[in-house]
Length: 110
Image (tube, one colour):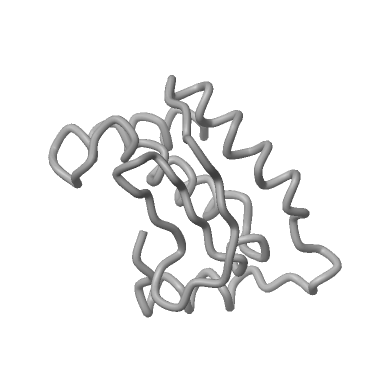
């Protein structure tokens, strides 16, 4: 999921958290795995590392990579990024089906 200038700025400015309030890596991984189970997909690997231009990515081999800065973002934004990338394990593009599933899962949680 690419970082939009507006999206990144809004997410960072509206809900900045000090480092001690960041989500621990193991909690973040648990969030990803819980969503993976709910979506019926199984990522081969989950990486968390610094990324310059994206919040996350999904490889064709099933590896999910998330930006470490995501650990400092609000839960709602993290959820959007996690669901977006996990859906790519079953729908590799951003077509109508992908957008409909993304909307359905994000609205269903709220």
